[in-house]
Image 1 (cartoon, one colour):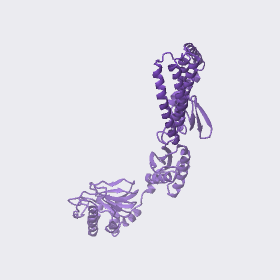
Image 2: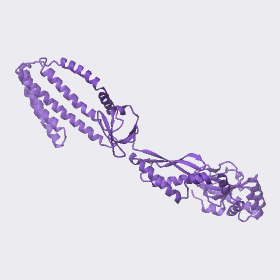
Image 3: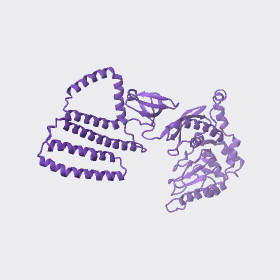
Length: 512
C-alpha cells in the first residue's frame, strides 16, 4: 500500500467531498431502476453502494487525507473490509452471469455450459481476493508457502495419479462437451441417458433403469455415439425377408404400409424400402424408418415387425417359411406353373376389344408367337422415339403412353393394345410406354402380328384410327400448336402403326 501515489490533503479532500456523493447517488438511482425491473443485478449494485464506496472513501480519508501509515493495524483492517466487500460484489455479479448461462441452456437447441466453467470464475475471484489481501494489505510473503505447495503437489500427484488423471479427463470432457445431460449415448457397449457429468465421472441410466457410473478417463479415450446430436433425428434399420415369389414392388408396398402405420415413424423424411438380397427362396429387404426420439427405437422395431405380419396377410404377400422352402420348394416347377397356357393366352388376346373378333386361325397364330412378360412399376416398356413392331396386350396393371414432355400422357388399362409402331407421321416420333403399376403384358412377335393385321382390313382401320386419336390426344396436352396427325397404313410387320388400347377406352381414360 506504500506505493500508492500520495497527493495533497486538499486535493484528496476535494475528490472525496465531490466524487463520493455523486457515485453514491448514481449507484442509488441505478439500484432503484434495477429493483423496479426485478433484476438480479440489484444485489451487486447494493453491495457496491452500501459497502464498497463507503469503505473505499474511509480508506482514502485515513491514508490519503490524514496520511496514516498503511502498514498500521487500522488501515489494514479497513483495507481488508474493502477487499472483502469488493470480492462479495464480484461474486454476486458472477452468480448473475452464471444464472443467465443456465437459463439459456434450457432453450431447445442450445448447448449447456459445463458446470466446471461456471465454477472457475468464482474460484479465480476468490484466489485473486485472497492474494491481494495477503500480499498487498498484510504484506505477507507467500514465496515459502508456494514452494511448500509445489512440493506437496508433487507428492500428491504421484500418490493420486489415477485420480488426477480422471480429473484431467473430466476437465477435457467438460471442455469438449461431446454430450449433455439428457442426451442418449452409447460408449463401450454401454447405452443409456446421461444424468449428469462431474469432474471425475459421468452417470448414465440404461434401458433397464440401472445407474452406471463411467469414469471420465474411460470416456475421454472412447468412441462415443451421441443419438441426440447434431439433431434428434435417427434412422431405424429393420431387415425383413419376404418370399421370393412376391414381386418386389408388391413387397415394397406391403412394407411401406407397415412402416407408415407404425407409431412414432415420421412422415418427413418418409420411410424407404431397399432390396439388399436376391436369393431364391427368399428376398431380403431393409426398411429405413425415421424417428425423432432414440429412446423409442426398440419399440418401433418391434411394432414394425408385428405390423409386417398383419400387412403380409391382408395384402397377400407371404413371408418365407423355411421348413416348406427347404423341403417342398421347386423353383423350376413354380416358373413353369407361372407361365400361361395357350388357352389362357388366347383368352387374354380376346379380352382386347380390337382383337376379340379375329378368326380362330388368326388367334392361334398370335398365340404361337406370344409370351407373358412382367414389368415393375416405373419401368419403361417401350422407349420413346424407338420404333417397335411387336404387338403388346396389357393383361394386368396400368401403363401410360408418354411423349417427350412428361406432362403429356395417355393412360392404359388392362385389355388395351399397343405397339406395332413405325413412323406415325412427319411431325411425331413414336411415343413411349411406362408402367405405372406392376404390369403383366402379352407380347406378340412382329412377324405374326403383321401377318394377322395384313389379312384383316377392319383391324387395320381400327388401329389407324386409334393411333390418330392418340396422337391428337397427346398434342392437345401440349402447349405447342396442335398438328393434324397423318394416318399410317398397317400392311405388315415392316410398316406398323401406333395403337395402344381401343379408341373407346382411350377417349374415357385420358387425363393430363
